[in-house]
Amino acid sequence: DTEVTQTPKHLVMGMTNKKSLKCEQHMGHRAMYWYKQKAKKPPELMFVYSYEKLSINESVPSRFSPECPNSSLLNLHLHALQPEDSALYLCASSQEWTRYEQYFGPGTRLTVT
Amino acid sequence: RKEVEQDPGPFNVPEGATVAFNCTYSNSASQSFFWYRQDCRKEPKLLMSVYSSGNEDGRFTAQLNRASQYISLLIRDSKLSDSATYLCVVNTITQGGSEKLVFGKGTKLAVNP
Image (cartoon, rainbow over all chains, first blue to last red):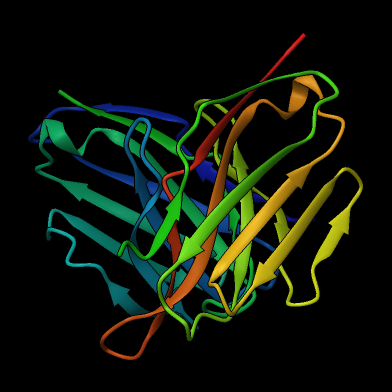
């Protein structure tokens, strides 16, 4: 089973709100990722967690705060977002950090008003 | 030179046609290569990994040419359901020595009845 789940599917939030995106996998993968994808663009890497430790932060603004509570869960905490942050946020996991295929969740479509 | 380059298309082909996509990458140290497909407003789904010896999965054949730093995807007997955007994905060594997967911008395929 190569399933990664994400909640919520859709999220609309104001610029002063605080919300969280959640991601879960039960494949025993040790690496998890957050990507941001705008329309007609490829996914852009935001964060990489390897063995529950943050390994890559692609210079993401601090209004995005990742958290990895355990090896199966990944959260992305959102605060004071801007309208240009509206996008599809994808979570992915892989057996190990890179060199292995990544499996994506269905994404959370975020709209910031 | 961009890290991963693909012809954006769109490729419009009739059902039953054979279509080929190419992708070039700039980092000669790259070790892992993948093709993903992405349907409109959905997440990327792994189509196949690309190995040095080439690999085939049904109607799909992937090839890797390390000397010329390109990978290819051949789709035979195209089906309407093959209509999607095909993403070339390559692992890249960053300046800091870590690795990440880099996505090409994707090639859009439309298979017409």
